[in-house]
Image (cartoon, rainbow, N blue to C red; front, side, top):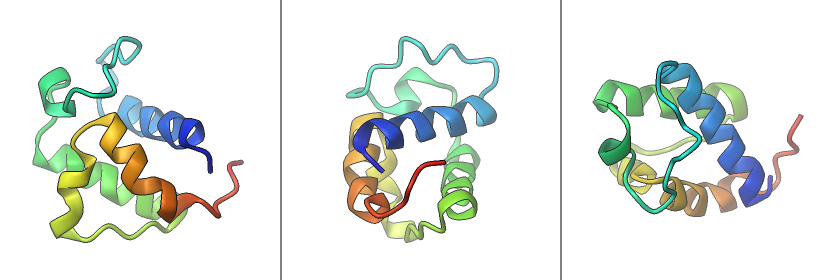
Length: 86
């Protein structure tokens, strides 16, 4: 997957987790917690959804890499490089 495809995938997951949030103005460099009302369970949902959809394993001590859209895409790019988007 390309970085743009990974970003779209994360937006899709976020829209499922926070259906009432407007994600159109999301600042990629600001933390998700600053911009969205996410709690630790929401982050776990993101991790579980990535595992379910793409079999991407994220160790608990690496959850900090999912703080913002930019850091999430950077972190996931090598893990998802060989995944073909549907």
